[in-house]
Length: 275
Image 1 (cartoon, rainbow, N blue to C red):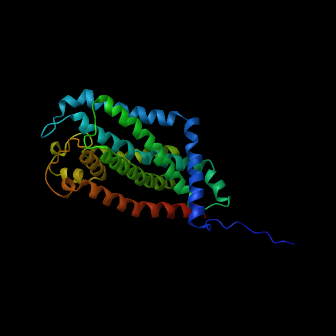
Image 2 (cartoon, rainbow, N blue to C red; image 1 turned 135 degrees about the vertical axis):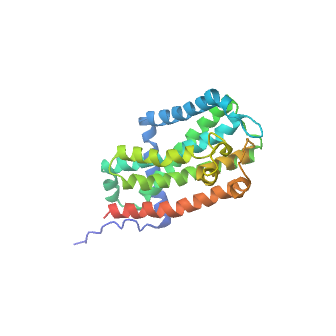
Image 3 (cartoon, rainbow, N blue to C red; image 1 turned 30 degrees about the vertical axis):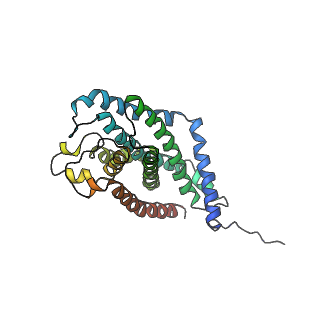
């Protein structure tokens, strides 16, 4: 009698883990055409911010040193949208847990890491598509890249890496809350202060002096300033210093720190609910 051999989950090596992760990512992406409202409302929300601040508030927000407020605004809108990608990831993870899909994945002969990497990969692709739509809308309201195609691609790559980082934060949040509604509320409460206590909508010179250092060292401010610098858009700072002089490097440092913290936390949390 041939003994029954149980599949060794999570022991297929890097190639299997990558292959399984791509399969899970494709599964997540296939949900978008079936629920197009997810992408539609995410895009509409961001376009609403563009229209409100560009045409309603833009005339009342002068830039130190001059320059187009709309060109100043658009990199901030891109950063804000990708920051809220964490909420999308958190809701997706919580929904999969509550529907029992994660339990189904555990029963399959697949790498355990595929559930998390697949989620983050798919969300980067999803948010990359939204970023393209937002860039087109930005061109329509007067935004432009003045530094060439290479700088454009460098900025886009930095934005996608930021989206990848935020998706790991979303994975951890999604695994840590009991319901989709809680995931939405917690994500909103955690991310909204980051986007508004920053240089996304207004120059940091307009903030109280005790808030300026917080805003300038904010990771959302860093990615916003980095892309403004790369694309030749207005990029005023309240004072000289590391955030003002090295925004790209600061962005990379922030992303390395956030990934080093939240990716292991997410993996640990996933293992704890998998037992």
